[in-house]
Every structure is written in structure tokens, then in C-alpha cells.
Image (cartoon, rainbow, N blue to C red; front, side, top):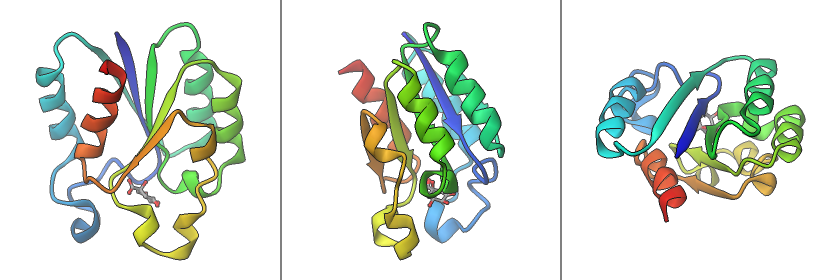
Length: 138
Ligand code: DQA
């Protein structure tokens, strides 16, 4: 199975960024350990601060990838373009958030991407990614 993990803006410094909210584990270290836990899965990892690049990667995933795990970061609350790109492809997308966005500021309650995703996992720290991977296996 080919899974693509896409991380949006401000997620390249998890482990250092606001550790009380996002924890102390770097995503690079965490994804390296994940690769060892799921040896049957071919992972590709993409980080981008740019909305247009995320849209392009979503389009390019069509017919190439079995599932996408997307943490769109702040774009989850703002990006019609990313929502439309998810709607335009048939690859299932599971939306992931490290923090529980529904327990934070009101503006994070507005998740405009979630309705077009297969599911959403929010609030389990970096383990949210592992739960998302498991959902594709199950
Ligand atoms: C986040 C939650 C978003 O609201 C925030 O803008 C982020 C990180 C999370 O993983 O908890 O950048 O996506």
C-alpha cells in the first residue's frame, strides 16, 4: 500500500514549536520510527508551507497513491482551494491534527476541509498519524 503523508504550514518544527500544545517529539524522528512499525507500507512524506504546492501534490496523487494523511495546519480553517482539490480526486484523505482543534480557539472549530475527508483524527498528539495509518490498514 502506498500512503502519502502531507504536512502543511508550520509543521516542520513540531518538537520545538509550542511544545505545551504539540509535544516535544519532532515529526522527522516520529516518521522514521513509523516506517519501522509499518514495513509493508510505502510512505512518501511531503512538507509544504504553500497552499498551491499542497493542491498540486493532491492532484498528482490521483491514481498513484492508495491513501493520503493530511495535516493541513492552519489551512484546515481557511483553504477552499485545498478542500476543492480533495473533492477533485478519488484518493481517500484522512485529516489529522496533533492538537484537539475543538478544544482550542473558536476559529479552529471552523474546519472547512474536514467535511470532504474520509475521516478526521484530532488531539492524540503525534500518535494521531499512527491512528490514521491504522485506519487505512483496517
Ligand atoms: C494543527 C492545528 C491547526 O489549528 C494549527 O494551525 C496547526 C497545527 C495541529 O496539528 O494540531 O498548525 O493542524
